[in-house]
Image (cartoon, rainbow, N blue to C red):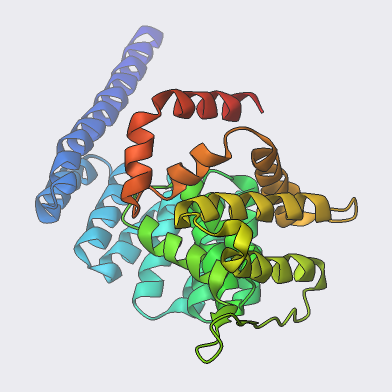
Amino acid sequence: MKQLTFILMLLCASTQITAQSTIEDYVREGIPYHDKGEYDKAIEIYKKALALDSKSTLANYEIALSYFSKGDYDLAIEYSDKVLKQKSDFMLEAYMTKGSSLDILGKTKESIKLFEKAIQQTGGHYLLYFNLGLNYYNTSDLEKAEANAIKAIELNPGHATSHLMLANIHNQKGNSVQTLLAVHYFLFMEPNSNRSPAAFQILQNNFGGNVSKNEEKPNTINIFFSPGEDSEFAPAELMISLLEASKSLEENEGKTEDEMFIKNTSSFFSILGELKKEEHKGVWWAFYVPFFYDLAKSEHLETYCKYITQSGNDNSQKWLAEHETELTNFDTWLKNR
């Protein structure tokens, strides 16, 4: 009898292993269809996996993702809930899919509650903070949007979209220094994507937006400066305007726009580094400013400027093609700093 029981246990274990392998095989079969946009075909295959185990978190999540991708958000939520009820694998992915579906369906308040719950239950993940921040951004709660974007950056400084959202938040607030720091870092991480030209336009607008020429008096430049409540950045805000106005000085006569961009970028980063005090904390002073100040003091600033402007500047593209050694040296500096 003991021997028979042992054989039955082996058979059960073997069946479980085979079923699990088959579920994964079905998922592997369905993923290429999903990737090609053939979502119904992918879902059809994934459901074969569910026939083996209706509680499979892997299969339920893949179905939820395919429904989300084809725009069937109610079913994306339904299958995400099947994953979340298991409280096992793919919880983060299911929270993301369900939260995004709720937001698209106009249920942003529900989406916010879901992401807040997810953060509490999972201990927090940068994508949860980012999406929570995005929801707050879309409801014009810029303070909470900023807090969550910063938390996402603290957890994963390499998440370019969080830097872009932070730049957009401060662009709306009218804070040029913070906008420039965040958009500079975004362009450093993503210099040549479909989002890069618009990001570079934000950079240009914030570097020259407070300066205008007097049409009646060609030699007169008007500077509009309002430091607001953010006094720790007030000196840098003023300096931005002065740097833009400096383009008309005699000492800069004959310099190209590209040359002035490099010069003023160096000055901007250096000024912020010199303004930094021991009591200055947070992402601006502890993360952005030290990096850019080190960059300004290095021999790689020109390379950096060419690198981040490549998406919309033919001169930068040409320069980068002709200066591979400088790019390699810049990369080495970044790895060793």
